[in-house]
Structure formats: structure tokens, C-alpha cells
Amino acid sequence: MKDKKSTDGSAFLHPNSTLGELDLYLIGEGRHERLWEVLGSHLQRNEAGDVIGTAFAVWAPNAREVSLICDANFWDRNTHKMLRVGSSGIWEIFIPELGIGLKYKFAIHQPDGRWVDHADPLAQRTEVPPLTASIVTEAAHQWTDSAWMKTRAEFQPWRGPVSIYEVHLGSWKLGLNYQTLAVELIAYVKEQGFTHVEFLPVMEHPYGPSWGYQVTSFFAPTSRFGTPDDFRNLVDELHRADIGVILDWVPAHFPKDEWALANFDGSALYEHADPKLGEHPDWGTLIFNFGRNEVRNFLVASALYWLTEFHIDGLRVDAVASMLYLDYSRKAGEWVPNKYGGRENLEAVALLKEATSAAYRIHPGIMMIAEESTAWSGVSRSTDSGGLGFGFKWNMGWMHDTLSYLQRDPIHRVHHHNEITFSILYAWSENYVLPISHDEVVHGKGSLVNKFPGNRWQQLATLRAFYGFMWAHPGKKLLFMGSEFAQSDEWDESRGLQWHLTQFEEHQGIQRTISELNQNYAAIPALWEKDTSPEGFTWLVGSDAASNILAFARWDERGEPLVSITNFSPVPHERYAMPLPISATWKEIINTDDHKFGGSGIVNGEIVSSHTNGNQITLRVPPLATIWLQPN
Image (cartoon, rainbow, N blue to C red):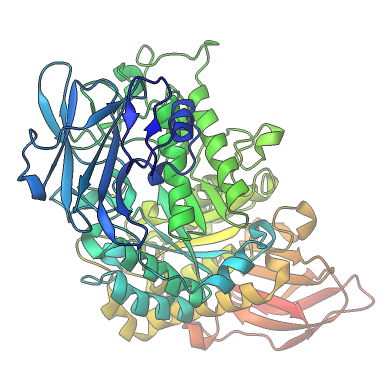
């Protein structure tokens, strides 16, 4: 290999450097979309393919010196001093004979004279927490999901079925790892009929009870459950089972651990120096300096890394609202306005736009999903149209209003009917995911089924009715693990799910409900083809507050309807009169009051609508239940 000269000519890159002039230029501009290929640790091979050593590179522009410390040099910072690459702020070194499995850190001599040892920000593998060293690794997994990837490239998720099972890997079943999850989790998700799984953050994090939301390694899957290749295999096997994979990604903040990103080179490098901009008041964490080229590049490359190297099908971006507003969770005087005097974080907006546009440009068919709880306009509108460029936004308003309505005694729901219908007024303002996530079953909120009033039968019936309503409502679906079998206790990551409950019929009934809803949902285009258009929805009964009844039609692109009728009252109706959207013979395909689900058995067979009376019909509407009708 030829020597590679740095951009300002003040230093030369060694023959085994991972960096070239173009790399240095793109990093300086904040536009290196494959940053993980040039920073961090990388095996070097000769022409025969044999490993000859490892190259290391790290960005630390304010460091006086940087040394590689590792197993091989007994963690002695005087053995392997790194070379500063011109004015780039990057330090690098090549060490012969070192290879896979080496544990290492960067010892950084700060401007204040202190030496602090840091994990590699671009590490692709780490020690198992609480240990904090980085580990040299190289992907060896041979992917077998080419059929999935080819189909995904043509997938249009806004007009396709998306039903997501949200999973915390460590507590779905205690004691599993990536390899065993590839067997047990996949079999269960297939049985339940979900199209996708969404993992709470798998990026390495030191504190388990943070559930992964305080990330220290933005390029490494947690070693708690195995190696990066083990995780690749889990994704591969999910794809082979026709299940998509979404990851939570957390660019909003990072923890203050001195061995990680905080004060990385003795200065506020990744974070803001001003605590009014750089510290998060709610979480005790640091906020990225989104306006710095290299930091923006680091985050965009992290997003692309998971999509590229792990074949991930979508990223759900956590805490977007906290990124968008400079005054988020801050009182007057505790925040700094933008250059126009406003509260919008313009640098964060630019980062999000760059991340979403790059992700969709490089990986068509994936999903970028925002957890955003405010009225910010255009979250799921394209960046060309002035939006943030996400494919979807979590519908927090629907979640809040619906759960608020259902937690009321049925006798009082008559006065709050607008809570259950209001979401339709804005259902097409964004592309929505309907989220019943982990946030609704933690921190004293209790389990989902126990939120509802009434005796045990009524609670379970309400849950089934709610799921039927949710799966028919416009928007993609997301359900946190345990809710699909009516877990009784609030989720606790240290205890795992209450799988023993699934031996009982009432919990099996909820599982059957979810399974049949998912199977029908995936098979009926009316439930997703026109999700993002008001033409895909028609109210049939929207104002019967006294009966707590709602009925609507969903339409596919060929004009075929599905009708959903929900009774959120414990009172059954043997002859409920209502219109149907077309004249046809209708068949009841879902009734959550069916005995097989644990209901009372008030069902309908074939229903013939009138050809002469505006398609008015009468039908049996069971208590606390949802019915789906489809033309025969």
C-alpha cells in the first residue's frame, strides 16, 4: 500500500491506515456515511488474506496525546503512542499481529494534564457490562436473507401491513441469548402473527435498568446476549421467517460516564459546553452538540450502520420531542433561544432531516419512525416538502385519549365519547403508528388489562374489544410484550414476563384474539392499503355515545370494505340497527365475544343487508366486544 498524505500535508498516514484524503475531507465536512469503516479498530490483511495486524483511529482534537492501551501492552500508555493526523483531530496507529478478541481503550491526555481512559466511540464490540473495554472484531456472518432484502427494497410500508411486537430482549424470557432467541422468539412471533418485532435499544449500555436508553456504544450491540455475529444471525433468522426488525435508536442524549463519550478529549466534544444546551434535566444525561459536523456525522453514520451492517428494517427514534425544542423540560431562564430567538432546535432539526433522508436514499423500503408527542408539523412529511422526513410518527394522542376513555366506568363513557372518536379528526395529518408500548405498563401505571374497570371478565372483554378496535383503526400497530396475553403485573425487566399465566384459558383467549386479529389484518388490504388517506375510512356509527358503540368501514384500493363495530358497554344488543356501506351478504370474521376468545358467545353468522332500505341491518352486538364484518 502507498503512504497516504493528510489533507494539510503536515503528517503522513501509515501504509496500513484505514483513512485516506477523501475520508478526512468527508469527516471534516460531517458527510462520511460509512464512518465505522475508517474510525475505530480494523483488522488489516495481506494480499493472501492473512491478518497482519489491527489499525486504530479515534477523533480527539483537543487531546495532548493519545495512546492505545490493551491486553497486549498490559494497559501501559507509554507503549503504543498514537499519531496525530494533521489538523483533522484524528489519531491513529497500526500494531502488527494484534487481531480479533483484543480488549482495548484509548488513554487520552487531556488539556488539563489528566490522563483518562475511554472506550472506543466507534467500537463494534464491547465487554459484557459492567466491564467497559472495547474489543477488536470483524463480521464473519454469511447472510441468507437475500429474498427478504429484495422484497423489502420494493416494500411501501405506508400502504402495507405493519403489526409490531415490542420486545425487551433481556426480560422477554430470562436467561435467553441471541442464539436461543433466534429459536424461541421467532416461533412465538410467528404464532402470534406479528409482521415485525421492535427491540428496545440493543446498543451497548452500562446500566441495565435504563432498558438501553442510556447508550454508551452507538455502534455495538450489547454483549449481554452474545457477539455481534450472534445478533446478525438473530436478524437473519427473523428475516427468513418473514419477520421484519425495528430497533430503538437514541440520538437525543448519552450518559455522563467518564470512560465513554462524556468530556471525551478533555473538552465538551460530543456534548455542548453550556449546560443550558448540553445537559438533560429529566434524565441526568448529556445532549449531543447536533450542530457540530463531526457529531452530526457520528449520529447519521450510527443510524446507517445498523441499517447496513445488520440489515435492520427500521429505526424508531426515541425522544424526538426532547431534541426539537430547546426549552424541553426547562423553565424560563434555563434555556438558550436559537439564532432567531425561537425555541426550535435548528441543529437537531437538520440532523433528523439528514438522518431520515440518508436512510431512505440508501435503504429503500425501510421505516424511520419518530416517537414525537407534540404538535410539530410535518414529522412524517418529506424533507423536500419541509418535513422531518420520517416515514411514521407514534400517535401518542390516540393512545392517551383511548386509554383515558377505557379507564372510565362504562356508565361515564357516554360523557367522554369524543375521546374515543377524536383521533379520526387528525388521523391523516401524519403517517401514524398506534403505540401501546412499554411506557404504558411501567412506573406505577400497572398492566394494561388492570387499567380497565369492572370484574375480571369485564376487564378481559374490554381488552379484547380494545384490540379489535385498535387493529381496525387507521394506523400501524404496536404492542408491548406481555400485553398479548394479558400479563397481570406491571412489567419489571428484572423479573421477566409472567409466562406461567399462559397455561390458563383466560390468558390463552387473549393470545388467540391477537393471533386471529393479526392473521386477518395481514390478509385484508382494506385495513392498510389506504391507511394514509381519508378515503380509506367511513363512519357508520360515530355518535351513539349513549350505547358506547362505534362502527366504521375501512376500504381497500379496489373499493372492497371491512366493517368494524365496537361496543364499549357491558350491555348487549340483540337487534342493533345500523347501516352497512354496500349492499352485500356479510360474514362475521372476527367477534371478540366468541367463546374461543373467552367471551359470552353472542355471535352472528351470515348477515344479509337490505337492498331497499339504505343497507340498514340489525345484528347482535355483544357486550364489551368488537366485530369485524366482510362481504362474502
